Image (cartoon, rainbow, N blue to C red):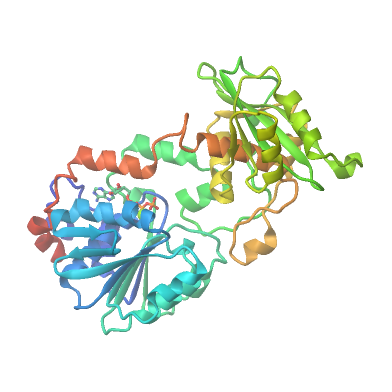
Amino acid sequence: MNISDQITLGRIQKPSKKQIESIVESDARINIWEGAVRAGKSFSCLLRWIEFILKGPEGEMMICGRTEDSIVRNIIRPMQRLVGSDMVYMPGKREVRLWNKIIYVVGANDERAAWKIQGSTLVGALVDEITILPESFFKMLLSRLSVPGAKLFGTTNPDSPFHWFKKQYLDRLEYPHLKVFKFLIDDNPSLEKLFVDNLKKEYVGLWYERYIEGKWVLSEGTVYDFFSREQHIIPSPPGRADWYIVGVDYGTSNPTVYTMIGYSSKTFPNIWLEKEYYWDSRKEMKQKVDTEYVEDLKKFVDGYNVKYIYIDPSAVSIRIELYRYGFRGIMEANNDVLDGIRFHAKFLNNGTFKICAGCVNSIHEYATYRWDQKASLRGEDKPLKENDHCMDSIRYALYTHFKDGEGSRMSAEDLDMVRAQAYGIEQHGRFFDSTWSQMGTL
Ligand SMILES: Nc1ncnc2c1ncn2[C@@H]1O[C@H](COP(=O)(O)OP(=O)(O)OP(=O)(O)O)[C@@H](O)[C@H]1O
Ligand SMILES: [Mg+2]
């Protein structure tokens, strides 16, 4: 009988061929679902994990991810949607109880995380977003899976081809205990075409190759390699801004940069870089003191309806000076560099963010801001600290302001939740009671 014919999953979509194959064949010691975003990796891995809890060997288990918050969002809530009230999560104890099994929850966001699991003996582990965990933690976790029949199930998106996980594990095809399932967006049967089309528009360059095409590619060359005069530069603002935000990158020996971004709800493009201030004390052969920079900022914003000023979080002295001067709306910028760059790239790519032609230093930096090649070869994505002052200043304002404020869209997890409710997965809590026996005989 055809395998997929045996499945009756109610309003959960019938898993794709790839999903079924991965669930059925993931019987190695290490089982990895890797590939494009929203491709149905976690969903398949989770079904397999639940089966393992139900039918695997007795013993302690662990769910690991970057932070407890991300574990709750990416694993615990989706698991609860599938198994319903049989599963109880106790945040204080960092434990999940399901079918008389105890499953520990461990966030591994730094190199010290390995000690948290030292000494434990595990029969199973579920690992979310492997590439953003420390290598030391992953190694320790494998050493803890010492019971016969112990298994690890993990998911990840592609990263650098030199990333430790790619080099030490995925590339070692001869490694007998490893199975890898590569997923692309089409392997998720639940996504509507419009959603997939929009998703593809969110990524560009390096991120398109990794998150849409599922390739392990190097961060090399210029960061915004898709930046072009025709597409991204406009001669002047498209209209009157409703309000402005300002980014501040402060340097004493390095340049100090202010960038002003206009927002209008009535125009398209509706976000634009209107003007910049650039002071390179080395080139100008004149060092300015904080009070002079504050005066310059005052002139820069004079006559503009500026809502917020986002400042380099390390520039404490200038921030204090600005408060003393009576500036309002001073905010410490979020400095998550890679997330900020990806967000910045998305806004350029979807056409909503443009650069006014007068911002010559910023335009120069878009063309010259590069990835650090040495770091890339170590498997790390990191931009070079050169030609980065306008880039940082724009990123501070753009990312901090729009990432979850006006103009931002629902996160993938929010969309998942809405979709789950629409498909009735939420109400399908006892899914496994009625359908697992059929899934189990795949
Ligand atoms: N067979 C299915 N039936 C119903 N929903 C599904 C199915 N497969 C996947 N989904 C849903 O599609 C969405 C994306 O799937 P999933 O979270 O597994 O993707 P992913 O590959 O892990 O993505 P990311 O790389 O972004 O973490 C989720 O809401 C998931 O519940
Ligand atoms: Mg996932």
